[in-house]
Amino acid sequence: MTSLADIERITRVARQRSPHWILRKEWLIVPPIDHYVRGFYFRRSSNPKLFYLYHTISPLYEPDMSGSGARFGASFGSDAWSLHDNSVEDELAVRCEQESVRFSGIRSPEAFLRYSADFTNIEWSESMILSHALAGDLVLAKKILLRALFERELDDWYKGQMRTRFLPDRYLVSKKRRLRRLLHVLNEGSDRTEAFLHTLERINIRKLELQEHWTSPWPRQKR
Image (cartoon, rainbow, N blue to C red; front, side):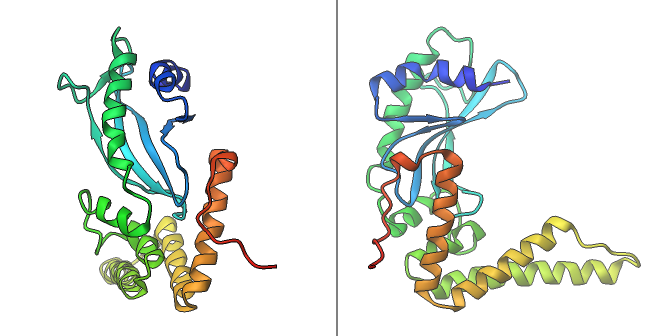
């Protein structure tokens, strides 16, 4: 299993070559940190000697920070990385430098949506609801949300018709409740939506202990 100590060791050269990069648990973060956390995410594999590496951008305004990106391997073609490869530190540093170019032009919700379009259907994905809202397209944000809510309600209705005893899944019930609350926020307009997203960003920044690195893009409120 890839431990945090393993990640600290194998990213040593990358952090020496790019001292402004930030290591936080499974994240090797490439500043700036504004609406998004950009960087590289380490994921464990079933083999304790191997791990996977992703380039990803995660919105701070998403409750679970579900990001967009893809897995990439070493330059010699392996999909998985070996913890015990003697050259893993140098190889990882070079590959991360190469992949970090992907982040250079993404400074707005619109740019994030264009980036995400390479990895998901942005007009169907629930993880893009708040990105569309922040980009100013509340109509599309609500369309995706209502579709997701309708599909869950329809699924519950169908299961209730097919089973004599049907107990809704607690996670799905909670998800529907969150979607309804979000719909209420979106219906209150752009100012209320931005205030809600700003609150989510502050929560995630505290969770990641990145307060000192956050260059909040939100305008200061007048006093």
